[in-house]
Image (cartoon, rainbow, N blue to C red; front, side, top):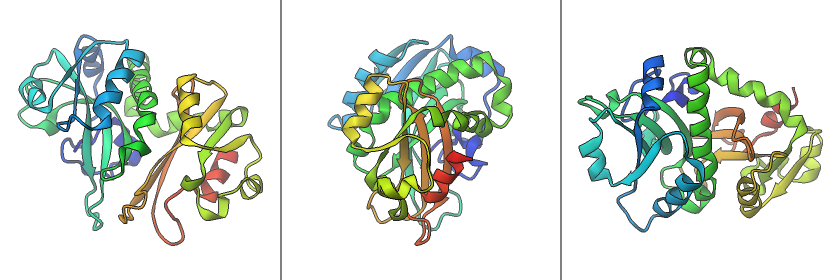
Length: 281
């Protein structure tokens, strides 16, 4: 659906079903902080997203007033400039023969825009492939919302970075990884780096192969000593397109590394040896 702020990091490769690479203006950023943020719930009431996001907003959100609405209500309220919206969207790529679709979490401004793709975007993050089971990402929603909130504050204080190289701004944090413990899931690692011994050959800093529960605990505890891998891949859905790799601070919600590759026999769905090498440079 939306091509949002985060697509600046992807060099415009994504063609969403809404906007066309919009860069938020200083006015957009300032306007956002005067709005009430409406969180758009999924139509299926049984989805874990609807339950988790309510707890997440209560725990994490403090920069605007907020409330929850249905998608039908979103259609009714999205043209009102006093609202901003946090919503999960469906994204696809231009000229992608795999027809892969992804979930992105977006923060967008309401207003008198005829089409959804005209709504200004403040921030967004990749969450998962569209058909991936929720338990692959639901436990990370809190940190992703925390990042969006922190990013909104950052661009309010430093609006110049929006039109600069946003990717460089976040990847500059790579140098601080050596002081953290990197948490990774074994099933999110390429086969040539899926063991402690193999990783140690190319990565000299602290790391730990962990479970989802350990990552969730580090996020809940806001553990400043931990960064973890957030991987967006097909997870066995048999759609081999792009694999996104983001390293996030469990305590500070900063992005320490962002990259992606096209999945192939040579570059499988997972964190690669080349990624570890980039962290060491």
